[in-house]
Length: 254
Image: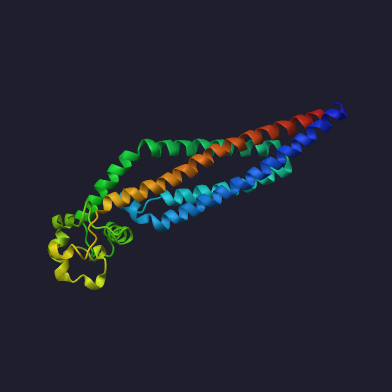
């Protein structure tokens, strides 16, 4: 049996590590809430942009929501494991933090490396969406996405409003109403004449606007992801240290 003085020296260290790890777990739990909020925001605000690159709705917001929910659960688990002082639970918590760290690091690096490919793919998808636009078909997700983007970003066409001249929709209906600055001034005759429409519709192209919005928002998401990823290293270190100290303290008491 080890001298009592050594055990007394170990207990303050364990108490200190528990305090830090509980504080960390609460912050980690809060980051999960942030990811949940970002996922919900992405689903609500960015669905139109994501749907251009796919015939079906993207799963990206759901991935963020699911990841956030898992982090919230394990953040609470970390608090419980710390309060219980269970070495195996602390090791399990450290393993989970390691997996999350690696997953977020890989996702962040992949997004940065392939950002130009993503931008090019989005450009081709948007051009196809404009060429195949059918504003009279409410079930067309790509047409709805084009309308939503043009109204939200105050733009028209791919590079400018004259891009609609190459579409079948323009020959039958003119420029889409979603390009109009004010619906009251956009008559069918005006929308079928580029000279008349120039003063009534947005003349700036949407592709540059879409990529600007996507890049600025992706930068925020990437920054949050990298911050959370490297923040997990602190939790891994604290969990491993606390587990080791508790195990050694239990061994010394034997």
